[in-house]
Length: 61
Image (tube, rainbow, N blue to C red):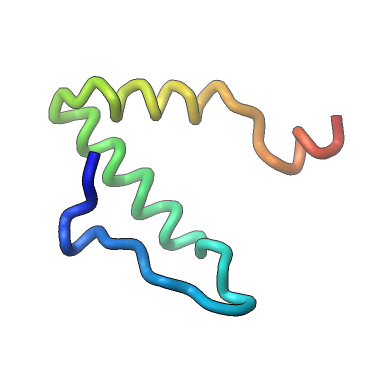
């Protein structure tokens, strides 16, 4: 799936390499919208995200 011009990720340099909470929420909203429109890959991605453990729990295990 290619990014449209309005969805291009920003290029980061130095310490600002991590994504922000706002960017994560925007990406999840785009996935939800695509899944609601019938995109099978978006549905699979949402299922995979729902089944994965959060990072803080995975590191503690």
